[in-house]
Length: 290
Image (cartoon, rainbow, N blue to C red; front, top):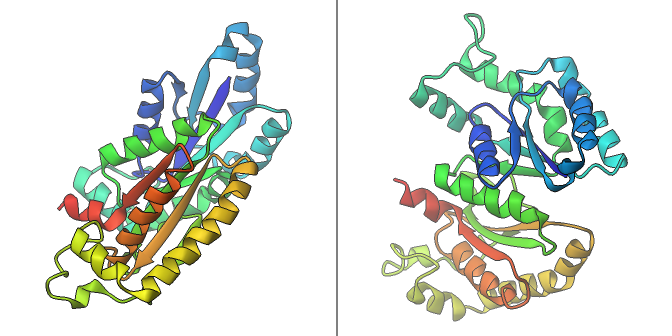
């Protein structure tokens, strides 16, 4: 048996995540009261055929706040009893959530005539904090469309049951915020910027012309080598510590040139040493959607 708890803010993609897990064979139960979780686990263990089954449980703010507060101790008790349980929390920025609710015209579960949408989201963040703090993995869905979220859940959650550690290099622009799900962050803003070259400005770090420019800069090569050396030394230790995934975020000002180049190059290098090495360019993906 493998049990995944899916939680997160309303509008962050919990239903999508549960549908992905259902598609790959999980038995899914949504909106389970936290207080009933131990009884459910005990009932599952009674049935002998449950050893070969996987379960996904959706828990959200519709629970009583008292139940949400006991969630960390309950998860610790289950893990101490060697129950294979994994907690996924989906997070999203407040402006993005407000836009999503506005577009869908759905009612937030905490909103009423005395509480507006922004206040409801802030209250939900507070109520779900015990679950977020307990999560094995927090995914920021602010910049993901539906298809990207589905792929990420498959890669990072379903794939986390594999024995090898999944490594993701993610480029981003600091002016749009640091990725919430980053485990390591490197800042490339001090490097020479192709943006100031008129012929390179419309290109990205994936283009040969930009790569040639950056490869000719001594500072770029020095930073790349420092990052490569650091990861070469420490990635095996992360993997030995039973890590199933790690996200290495590399940022520049806009997330178009320097960070993209470094992420691409690092992915190619470490893909020769590890089986599951991914690359994602947050700002380029965002641009593709508009």
